[in-house]
Image (tube, rainbow, N blue to C red; front, side, top):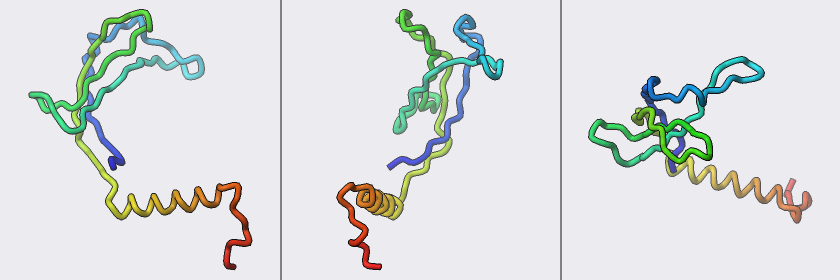
Length: 107
């Protein structure tokens, strides 16, 4: 089970549609909405695993490709961690069960 991925991204800022940038009401910062598609197991001819698209309005059907990226870090849970998490989840489910009775606890 994949736990964590680190990505190194490169965005060509000249391709950003500036009319879709927006300002935060609270912080006055300017934001860009974008989406990254990550292909964990394969790379292109340049070693990229990720493509980045600027999010467009729902009425716009074209795609605005603005960059790419590479996975530089992967951490998978070990078998022990998976087993431990599954046991903890079962315990939580038992405790949260509405039929669970305190008198079932031996102390």
